[in-house]
Length: 304
Ligand SMILES: NCc1[nH]cc(CCC(=O)O)c1CC(=O)O
Image: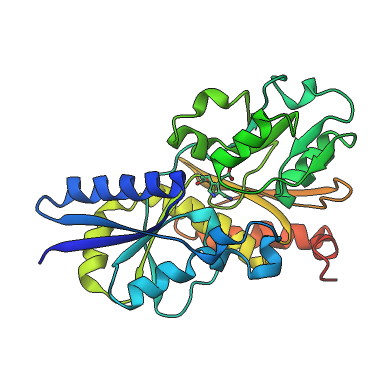
């Protein structure tokens, strides 16, 4: 039968994204029956330890991949920024959906922007990338850990645990929480995680039926931009343990990529940018990474 099953995590954001992919598939392929298979991953269960200690981003994919391997599901829908640089053998990215706002959001009940925060204000974010950029702007801030899904993080802000938090604009907008965005933290001054705001659909490598169903959903411009950003991260061995940020845009002259590596402890930021042809995003990612290496990035990343 003409059925396609989507394995998905069960957070509100993951379900929104899976439903979004399902709607696009039904629209493109009338007659195709698309069903969701909601699952819990180890990454969702373990909230009390840093991700890096328990195995990194792959923990959010494992159970979904097992479901695809066993034929219980055909695809998995992910926030692309949560997908590790190297997929497990046997899996591939089938398509990348059109990107939403890639920027981060400053969210606060008392203050409209970072500059308005009082001396020593408490800002919640567990992202080393966000911590480094906050530290660079405001060395006085108290940066506090904050994990959990988008709604959990907002609830902790509303309970008064923080004066402000930083989240992705895309996640807030998808959950109809865009009114919580007090200001956008946007490129080129503030950079997001590689592939932030983009949705990737994962499939079994070589499954021609699924590849054909996914192909028309691919947004080529988004795909090229995130390819440059991920190549940049990969060249610097990006992981959630290090503070890397990157954003590419496509212009009529090709791709423009900004990248930075930071030190969350002292707010040091190294920045680089370059332009390159749209048909070789990986090369552009490597060029910007090499510029940062020449500036001493490996020392910041603890690898030199
Ligand atoms: N790390 C969790 C995560 N993964 C994807 C998003 C938002 C959606 C996106 O960037 O595509 C978020 C929440 C956040 O960072 O605020």
